[in-house]
Amino acid sequence: MAAAAVVAEALEPWPEVDLVEREQRRELLLTGPALEERVRAAGGRLPPRVFSLPLLHSLEVCGCASLREPGPGLARGLPRLRSLVLRGNALGPSLSPELGPLPALRVLDLSGNALEELPPGRGLGPAEPPALPQLQSLNLSANRLRALPAELARCAPRLQTLNVARNRLRELPAELFALQLLSELGAADNELQELSPAVAGLPALKTLDLANNQLSEIPGELADCPKLKEINFKGNKLKDKRLEKMVNGCQPKSILEYLRVGGRGRGRGKTDGSEKEESRKKKRERKQKKESGEGEEEEVEEVNKLLIRILHVSENPTSVTVKVNPLVKDVRPYIVCAVVKGMNLRPGNALKRFLSMQTKLHEDICEKRTAATIATHDLKLIKGPLVYGAQSPQELKIVPLGRKEIKAKDLVRQLQLEAEEQRKQKKRQNVSGLHRYLHLLDGKENYPCLVDADNVVISFPPITNSEKTKIKTTTSDLFLEVTSATSLQICKDIMDTLILKMAELNKFTLENKEEQSLSDTEADGVSGPFNLRSNQNAEKDGSSPLIVEQVRVVDMEGSLKVLYPSKTDLDITASHITIIR
Image (cartoon, rainbow, N blue to C red):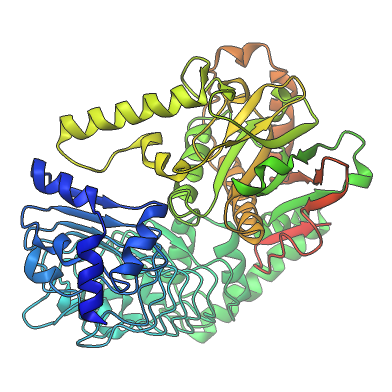
């Protein structure tokens, strides 16, 4: 079997490796449809030639369902490797052989694989001496890990960022809290039942995300982390109901202060008598305020839930419909759409936060657009009904964001030339911006597009939106689309997450009073006073409800294909969210 793989490798062309060898480049990127077949022919691993590039600083292999293990020789052959990205492959259930030692490695991304365990000998590498002495960032998210290796802190003693979200972890090893430089710890969407008081041993911790776990208590020692600024415990059923309301609606500073002075449940620092007396005093104050009519607003602010109201097609005579042309079936067949009304993007950096959130979703759950692509549009600039279809690269025309109208064929060629220029200037294979997604169009005879009633292309996934429907600070009503070549359910899951993030951003904007931003030239002319009054009312109510309108996706004959959100969509059980259906 091994001999056959070696022969297959010798027969299979690896032009990317040839280019790196010939030009002595420092970076190697392997991705795209052609990679699957070559890796399969090499026995589900990378060819040994990759591990004979001693000058290599960065190796990235993404989206290859055939890649089950990196292959032997990685540690020995790549002594200068600083960044190793093996995201969205099929690595697992462990790493064989183990990854390290890699003495220069600073970034390691193994997210989106099938890893179940990382035991000694089949994990990241030995703890003595440290296999990854310079590692700063480790991403193990979206795997199937049930436990983290106890020796992780000794294997990577300089770790600063650790992301283990979306696994099956029941606990975090006590040794983890010995990482003196750890500043970001993300372990959301696991099965964690306890956070150890030893978390106070992380002096550099700035961000902690333990949302959607099974925690019942938060240790008061968390308040002893001197640099902690951002915390997320949403989606946990805490025994202390007041604390549960606070984590769903208050700023981190208030939560940490509550923990610092004792709180309730796992209290510290107060005697039972003084706490009971204070409790009785607060009850009397609440009763007095309620009798005088002041208490109702305080109770609403304490709960402070995110409100999302769904407007059904039957209630909405102006609902948007998207028709699907059968030509798109072989290109990018899945699409889910929704309309969201009530966003406030005017104040301060609200628009910047919104765009950053979308970028982060593309990097994370969209797996760098390989799983799905999000597009957001200003609803007022769209004329329906819309048609989702496919056009030849010679026929498809679009005004891309920040560019002039161009044919898709010329746009792709232009981006390819820009990417090649980037590589030459920086002497690296990786590129940034839209250039990173060009390989997703490899081998496509037609390109997917969303067209409005005036036959104007408003979206060319997974590459770009149209400048015509661009989101601005004045935008309050948005049309959202999520497309995928993989799965309809992926589209729905990502749309759920997008809408939830939008609700959270809207709430943050209300809670953090910022100066109104009028940087867009349209700001003076787009019903500004009406929107401002609406926002002031929302602030007075202490809520930030979003209206989510259902959008029907139908075939060209009008038969229903998808309705979003349906009864089973936005099925969010988190206690800080209320869905009004």
